[in-house]
Each structure stands twice: as C-alpha cells, then as structure tokens.
Amino acid sequence: MLNTQRSAYIAALEPLRFEALLGRADSLSVVGSGSDEAILPDINSLRPDFLLLDGVLSGVDSLNLLRWMRDSMPAPPRVLYLGREEEWIRTALSKGADAAALWDCGDADLARLAQATAQTPLPRLSEPWEADRREISEKLAARLGISNAVKGKNYICQAVSVLACAPQLGASYSGMLYPLIAARCGTSSSAVEKAVRTAIEHTWLHGDLGAIQNLFGYSVDAERGKPTNAEFLSMLAGHVQRALAHRMKDGMEKKPPDEPKK
Image (tube, rainbow, N blue to C red):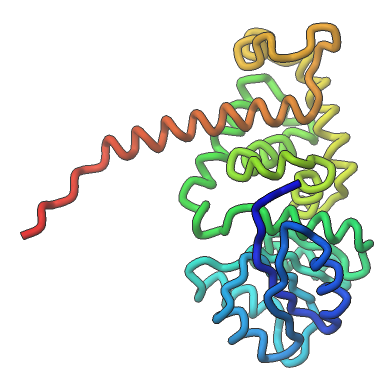
C-alpha cells in the first residue's frame, strides 16, 4: 500500500460518482469538485496534485482547461482525462493529459489508473530530467539488444523511465504501472504486460549475452532463466537512477560557482 497521499480535485458533470470512487483510495484525498466555470478558481486556489477531468463540462472547454493549467500553473496537477470517444482521448493526450480513459470504463480500472496517475511526480518538477531518463532507458534497451521490431520495447523504455522517476508505482505493476503505460500508449494494461514479457523472452534468446550478464549478473533465478517483468523493469530502473545521479553530479560539478554578493 502506498503511503504518499495526494490531493485530488474532480471536474465532472457527475462528481458524486467519482468522489465516492476516489474517496476509497488511501493514496488520494479529495479536496474539491465542480462541473462549471467555478472549477478554474478552485483549481488555482487549491492547487491539487491530481485532477480527474471529464471531457464534458458545463460552460468549460476541457481541452482549453488543460492548456491553461500547463501554461499558467507553476506545478500543474497530474491529469486523468475521461473521454466519450477514442478520438477525444487521443486529442487530450496530445494536449497534455497524463493519462486518459473512456468515461464508462469500470470503476475498479478507473480507481487503479487514478492512483497510478496521481502518484507520478508533478510535471514541472520532474521535467528537467525526464528526457534524460528516457534517453538512458533507450540506451540500456539498445545495449541489451532489444529489437526495434519488438512491440514491447517502447513499453519497456516508458515503464523503466517512469519507475526511475516514481519507484512507488512498483508497488503494483498490474494495478498501477501497466495501466499508466497503457493509457499513454492507447492500449490495454494486459497488452502492455504481454508485450513486455514477449520482449524479455526475445531478448534472452536473441539479445546481447555479454550485456545481459553485465547488467543482471546473478540477480536472476538461475533455474528459471529469464527474469519476471517486475525483476527486469525494476533492475533497469535502478540502472537509470544511478546513471542519472552520475549525470546530475557531473552537471553540478561543471556548473560555475555563484558570483559573490557585492
């Protein structure tokens, strides 16, 4: 169970349904809700960590609201967008939503996705090193010999980058991490899990043996051979964290000292 609680705001035409849903999550604390123009001052004053955003609101364009938060707030909330159609979801993700789902998705799936989205660090706070984490993840994948033709490579790189930034999502791969990656990629949680597993199997058969031994050593069960999805992703996330720490340290050492105050 996660012990980091996030404040949540619900912008929806039927907020009571979602208040009850999010209220049952230990990691979320609902601080407000609304369905019309009042949500703008609410969000601006409450500064929630997480926003559940309905694509249909009264007198408010949800996509413009996304743009306003990204442009105007120093630390905008993580946003889970609920759309009536697949096209809405694709548009919302392109406009800055962190995750998206169909409005009528099951409550259990929605609750898991909400928790996963809320637990990732705020965009502006993690943004300076986000590209670096992804770059290191992709270099590790290439070093292991994960083929570009394998569909799971993209999921692996995204998952490793996210885990390196928010290791708390490793508390539940199927409950939080996979749903988050699935929402970003427009697919299902089960499809992400299967594609990652297939990519690992392919890598263990056709990848770079030297790199595999160097990166994983004897940490994998010798009798089983290849690692589980969780072992594989968490191990690579650890490598990304260490590589990023070295990169950050080097950057600080190269930074010129502050000018003395006159």
